[in-house]
Structures are given as structure tokens and as C-alpha cells.
Length: 494
Image (cartoon, rainbow, N blue to C red; front, top):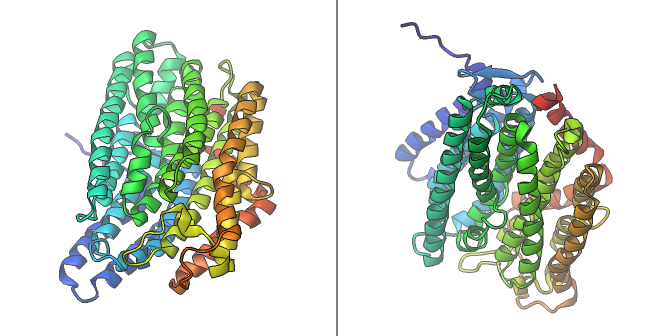
């Protein structure tokens, strides 16, 4: 029996994060007085080190390792670099919030964040259905624990229990779908599944049943209708620092697995999953935007907003293949990637503002807490206004170009009616974003106390808010990176 050591270089960043996560767990046992500072610093250094390893190993070539279970390509490199940046921003936003709450300020938050990041890295580079599942489970188990970190909060405990039960159900659906794909095709390797489907070596009936379960599992992870009911409760019940992490970084990994599974692996079944995605997208945009109007809690409003935004993402993904023709793929999938990056940027800044306004014993998660913010701090009010405008898709902020890119991909694919529906529902959705702006600038403040925040958080909030404005003026740079990543990584483009 001969054992061949796989090429570890394509997975060097994952191995580095894993090793550092284990080291941080050990350091936490021996460092007592400076535990919070040491673990935070090591976590940031780990993410920076992973970014360096990923950057140094980027080549633009598609490389497989671990018996084709892991793929290293340019799209993976770009998404991982964006992932590291997002997690670093999240940690800086969350630090003061965590330190003000003893149960949350311990090192478990940082170690769980690293293990969740590792799970997302595995999802992004998965070349096998089981690798996708392992990455999802590593991420999900970490998130379940993070949501329940505040043991004294019955709301957090309830949210974690709902998330655990529904997440286990979704994982079962996903795994059952994978088992049916294996029964129909005889393989779970994504590239080989695509080849066998192209050659007609599959039981179509079993395959379609498996596809339904796969799409249901993916829909739950994205949080789209009708698998969305956990999103508002978990966003609301979780500590705001956890909600910030949950509502940003995992969206990048979810986009990656949709591309890997559907666009690369099951492209032959595009006619089947395209109709499913369109139905999920329309329901998500409609219900998400309409339900958000009735919310008085900021986190619940952003939860329903996230559902609507994921509906837009599905619109772009559904526009990639029309009638089995993959000519639309490059335009549609690069638009989807551009949209998810812009959403993560805007969502991070918005939740960062909630954390900035929160203090010990007070959660700034009620919409009325933002009344008169312009009188308390005009600069932060301007930053939040730009973030709201971006998420609403108002010109000329980057969120407008993200929505425009998706809509032009939908129209190019021949779904003009779908684009019209999306635009009308987006107009409805703009109401609750503009309501926040109205409260900040035209209502008297309920609390006139000064806003205190660490310098690095103020700087990050400023950079985050200005980024949506600057990228709105020069969106071509980010669009070009997304286009290049999809072109070099999507197998249906040859």
C-alpha cells in the first residue's frame, strides 16, 4: 500500500489558519491577564498572514489537489482576500462592544470566528460535494455557538436553538440531495459530475429529485423565501457583534458554493434549477422588502433586507444560462459576484454603526434610536445616510450599480418582465431605508448624549461609508476584478 502525499501548497492558507487557531486555543489557556488583547492580536495576525499566503500563491491557474476535492483558482483567491478583509473589519467593529459585555468579551468569540472563517475558506475552494458539506458544517457549528454566546439572554438562547434545529434540517436536505446525485451519476466530484452529465451518463429522474433537495439546502443557507424564517429571529436574538459577522462574511462563501455546485457541476440541469431560482428570487425580493417596512427593530429590518438582497443575487445567477446557452454566463455571474461584494460592504458598515452607537447596557437596535443623529454627530449621520442610499440602490452610490448590473443581466437573458418586477419591488424597499435617513435628519433626538467610540472604529466607519460613495463614482475597478475572477474560474467558459 503506497501513500502519496497530496500537494499542500494550494491549501496553504487553510492549513495556516487551522494551525494558528489551534495555537490561539493553547495560548488562551496560559495567558490570563492579557487574554483579550493577546487573542485579539493573534486573530488579526492570523488573518493578515492568511491574506499574505493567499496573495503569494495566486497564479490565475486552476489547480486541483486532495484527489480533486479542493480547487485553487483566481475566483477563490479574490473571494478569500475579500473574506479576510471582511472578518478583520468585523473584529475591529466588534471589539469595543465585546469588551463592554463580560460574557461576550472572552476569547471564544475570536476562536469561533477563525474556525468559521476556515469553514468559509473550504466552501470557497471546494471541488467536491462532500468538501462543500464539510465547509458548511464547520461554519454552521461555529455560528450556532456564537449566537448562543450570551448565556444570560433568553432571546439569544432561543435564536440559537431555532438556528440549530432549522440548520440541521437544511443540512439533512443538502446531504440527501448529494446522495441522490451520487446515486444518479456515480460520483460527487464536481468536475466529474459535469462531465458525466454532458455525456448523458445519469438517471435524469433521480437527478432532478436530488437537485430539488440541493436547491432547498442552498436556499436555507442564503436565507431566501420560503426558507427564510430563521433570519429575522437569529439576527434579532444574536448579540449585535455576532449578527454583524453572520450577515456579512458567510454571504461570500454562499455565493461560491452556488457557483461551484450549479454553474460548474450541474450546468446541464440549468433549465430545471433556473426556474427554481427565479421563483425563489421573486418571492424573496417581494416578501423581504414588504416585511421590512413593518419592522421597528433595526436588526430585524436589516434581516428582511438581507432576504431581499439575496433574491437579487439569485436573479443574477438564474440569468447565467438561457435555454442551455452559456453565452450569458460571464456577464450574469460576474454581476452576481459584484452584487454580493457590494452588499457585504454596505451591510458591514450599517451593522458597524449599530455597534458604534451601542454601549454597556444599551443596544442601539431600535429604529427610534437613530432619531436626530445628525444633531448628535453630523459626520456619522452622513456615513449612515450613504450606506442607506447604497443599500436602497439610489444613484450614484455603488449599490445602484450593483442592482443595475443584475438588472441588465436579467434583461440580456430575455426576462424583461422579471426586471420590471424587481425594479418595482426595489422602489417599495427604498421606503424603509429612506425612513432611517428621515429620522436622522428631521426628527428630534430621543437621546442627546455624545457618541463615544474607539478611534479605529471611527476611522473604519468613515472608510466604509466613503467606500460606497467612491466605488459609486468608479465602479469599473471592482467590476473588472469580478469579471476576471469569473472568466478564469468558470469551467463552462472553457
